[in-house]
Length: 394
Ligand code: AMP
Image 1 (cartoon, rainbow, N blue to C red):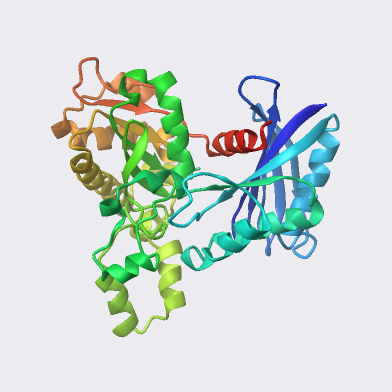
Image 2 (tube, rainbow, N blue to C red):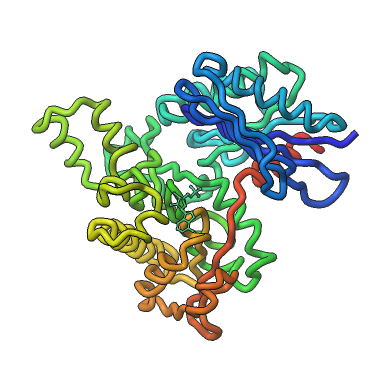
């Protein structure tokens, strides 16, 4: 019987999943990709097959599918009917926080779950949902091996000096340090560069993961040496709805002078800022690019400005940059943003090939450009599936 791996990414109101077929040898292929969204409000299951064709679109009443356990149940029913001849051999989870020590995925056991629970205060908006999905599966299928893959793990190669904040040292020991996120995406890119761009894989590379969440990572020899995200996924670049790096004095001002509660500030910083807050129009880059509104333009300009500043900082960390790699929704699809970023990087020796950029070629810099630029699609789900396969020996 064919084996399959299920990959899960549980958010507060959604449960994303992919099913990978595990061949006897060679790379795995996604056979189904989907999500249950609108948990708690208007639940809906959408599924596509490995070629992107829609295979299911189901809506329920709010109470019919109200939590992760019920969402998993709905997904399991659908998958059983579609993949009769396959046996589920393991499940890989995206877990946002692996703490200061975990630099690799872990097989889930009771002590591991206890440990992962201690990271909930570090990522209260994500970690509880990740762990809820693991627990729901433990209940439903106690026999099934599960693997936790951490978004923080890839950055554990960073020197201590890069992980510090300038707070009293005991805060570092208490866990207030730069963890970095989007690690599964960066790890996938690092693993892919030797085949798609061998000339830069061992060099000094800055990867720009520009999606609804956005960050940048400085890599040397395929290892993380610096990242724009820090203690939480609020730091660094401006994002779809998050402001990115800002003066912490602003938070004090909002608390002390404007009387906002911690909850209101959390809402402001996670949901109402960034491209959405600046443009007043939306957080989708496609919508902003198509708009003539001056504030849409301003939001795009600020997005690019922040990327350029961060690139300068990471270039300094690396002592120079050989290549810039674009990935994720905006990085992979927006020739306009890539062009604006590359124009700002001319001082580093980057010469864009405008036609290659418009076509979305893998290499988008001119031959002979001192610093090169690339577009490499990311695949965090495949990275999780690979880890799960390796850890379970499948
Ligand atoms: P991700 O979080 O990686 O899925 O990226 C999602 C974001 O990518 C969306 O919010 C869009 O802003 C952006 N995006 C996707 N396609 C395009 C495109 N063709 N042009 C510009 N932005 C895009």
